[in-house]
Image (cartoon, rainbow, N blue to C red; front, side, top):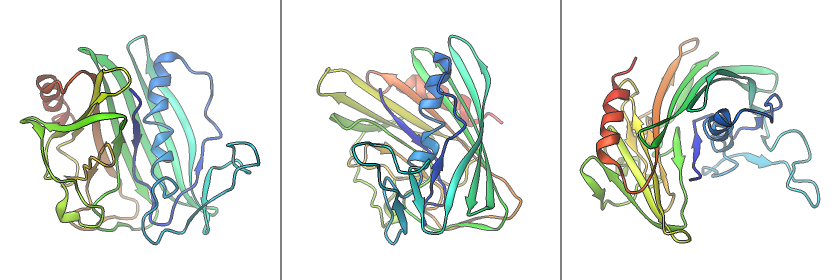
Length: 276
């Protein structure tokens, strides 16, 4: 199953991405982690994929006849904002699990405005894949996350089939969240699941996102038209990360075959939400 995993960046003005130091040759166990929590942390967090109203993000045009941009970056902004990868380090790996440490700088021109450290691990457990993700953001100036109904960490799945959302009570029949009305977000919950019956193969696949108890107050921007799970920390009001202080956000993603494995997700959620 193909999923996209991302995390917030200063998307109100757009971000660039730069992955010049990634090694193309990695062990298979590592590839799983790099293909989702690592590069996609940047790819889907700027305005290039889904611009917000009033965004100043622009694209560098691709060279004629290719999908490649005309410079070493894919997306940029008028004021030079870029999230630059400094290091991707393999912490551990074997046939069943792998862990990465990823370090990025948030730059405006030549000035680093924030440092980001991401910890990502993936393991196969009880017939599912478990991705544990931790994001640490340390700004060099007070950084305000404005109130918004969506944004931040999200996981987006496939759309080619009949899908549903679920929680610990079972399948849900709930109105979609609205992009401009934070009060219409779904209520706080330890986890939500998105599953889909694929048209082509007839297989059912899905994923759950588990919130961590230490994260800020969270509502969820879940929408059947976006095929994603999006825990949002800014729907109830703005949040300031003060200069030199670190905000830590932690999420667990459970990728599964078949319908929502409620009992297993409940167990994995109880385990995750109490970890320090």
